[in-house]
Length: 160
Image (cartoon, rainbow, N blue to C red):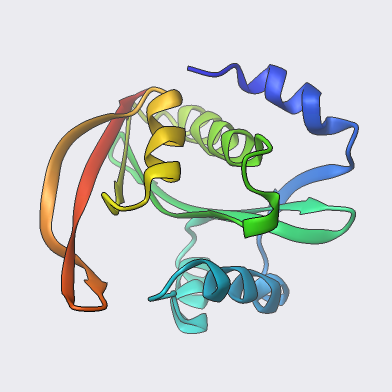
């Protein structure tokens, strides 16, 4: 597992900032979402996440949002429902930083386990999660919409 403190020290001097997502962030968040996914979340899904109290964060560079994450937590378990970095900012440690931050937040809430679903075709995300201690525990058949039907989801979990 990568050391998130080391990753943060590497990028801290580059004017990055983690903070809570607000509804005013949604135009920037949606622009990233729509560039990143063939089947993106709608504005209403993000608004619902904020309304019901999901733990939603953004990462900024020089005041511009370059990534975001949303997590639910309860009954000793957390579920990452979305994590995305703007394409031109990927492979710089920002996904690791954001994931480490929400994992720490889950720990502070008393969470023991963290789960997520990921498309098997999303090799970069799978690598990120595996590097941070996640392991495959199952599969959800036909979980995601796909161009020609449905795509399965790998279920990954990590003990916190």
